Length: 621
Image (cartoon, rainbow, N blue to C red):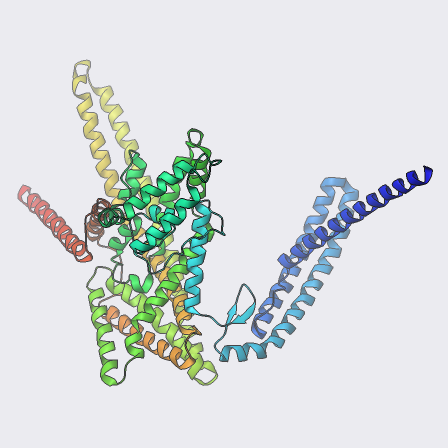
């Protein structure tokens, strides 16, 4: 009996020792992981691409170590004094001195190690670069890039994000988003069925039966929402299976609700507004959807979702979760930009096919003529010349950089093009900074003037009220109304004066956005390993021709001297942009030619009104 008891006690003690040892080991692993994370955040330890990257990484580590050591020398005594008084101060001072020595030394050692790694990787970098490979910043390795594969990855990532928002498991079969799919007003019904907006009637029918089996109430007796899901699925299929109702849904979206916010969202489409405002519809194949338009669209949708979230208490848990999950994340914004760059690269690849398939001088001449005709058409729009200069320079310099590194001795041509690009980007950054400062200053000045005028009018109103006799109070409301109208006109006039500065800022943002997008799109096109190096060089030459023609024609039309000064023209474009968004929201067809004609008419009407006003003034005099 005693022996069995002793054995049980030994087993319990052994189990306790084992548990304690396991906990200590786990704690030690966590401490090591935390220390490693701190070390990697302080010092640059990632694999460098080549010698130059190793030198840069080494300098960063040495600098960070020195800065951290100085900061520790200052902070440790202060922290020690706060905790332990004089004794704590000297203890902190000792720790700070040790850190001030240890951290810079560690930084220098890590830096030397990184330089050595970079030098060792230089041979591999040269060989990989010659083979057309690209350095993956995330994986820290040389890879072959494939444009078509990138397109597929973007589609899969979009499908995964969409599945997450719809509350589906990532293992569910959800149709990928096709980058070339048809644009529609609303895609909720397509997403319910898990099909592309370009899906055929057969694909829609197949998807409906597949999804219907998953959520049929008879097969999901434990799911209280199954009947609702099944109904929604049936309604979506009913709309999309009929050609007429599908066409109406594609154009107008779901029927409008009674919500004022929902109606506003249906009427105001920032993507359409900015496309009309800047006349970017003709250059969309080259630049995609402008960042400023996409951001405005995202902010508007998020604001509406935030407004809806205020009423979460009155919603079911499922509806509330859908609203909160609908908010656009940074990951989605990055994916949108990546999708945009891939689409532009694909558009450029399609655009230059006649050049790559050309067999003689006549074919090459026809390609060049077609580019010139397209550029001339773009230049006829209000912002066309500036678009041409911006797009043309970006395309030309990216092509020259790639060709220069491949075709010239020591890559001198590539370095020259890179220097030209860097200088231009620096100029654009200074312009952006200046435009931002000017917009902020102008806006602040206008607001101060409006506030000062409001105070003056209020003082005048009070003074007139005091001076009036008791019998004169009958017209007080009419006088107040006249003053309010005068005040509103004055405020509108002051705010109108800020429009050119705001538009200058918007255009400076567009230039930077277009330049960055084309840089990445051109790189995708030039390093595409689906084609051999000679074909990549041909692609770059075709892009160089497009860039040169765009830039030359844009420059000849005054694109380089662009400046927003004509307030009447801006107001005319803004009015037409609003009317166009409203018209398209109501299902009306408005072509690009229609918008340009409406803008011309609006400008002529404003000119006639201004001329008539001047004539009246002269007659009065």
